[in-house]
Image (cartoon, rainbow, N blue to C red):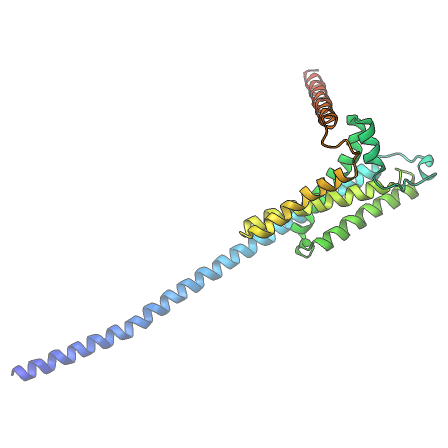
Length: 247
């Protein structure tokens, strides 16, 4: 009788082990299937978000280009005198701004740079192909050159090589800011540092073409003067805006 009981218990233990062994792979398979389903769902969500983000970037880029054409061409009136000559002296606008050192003259090159910064930011976001610097540089140069040519033939502005340089520089700065942000989001620290350094290098290039007084006390005083003029101009515009709202 004891031998029979031992045989029965041994057969039950063997059956239990077989059930457990059969159940183990099943649970592993279920877990793997759940992980695969979660990964697929996450990929779908990221794909949808990527498409929506790209569509938003394309829409913003289209709005920006429409505003750019409006500012540089459409709101200007034709002036035949603009076609008499083309400004071909590179960095002339910077020299004139430095020598006169008035806010109004400085605004010409600075606004030309700032005007194309959104171009360098939005273009790589809208079209990943332009996340390569040479594509964005070529696109910024081509767009600015097209505007200068149209301005010349329609007499709606003066064709200026400094405008071409400043616009291309602005697109490059925007590209660096965009790629620095993307690199930080991907935890690519070295690339982010590189794209952050490039705008600083462009500022250094600006000072290479300045007079020898850069870094002197006179240069510091001139910078303070420019800052005061800028703040005074902004305060005046703010006061005018408040007066208009009150009226």
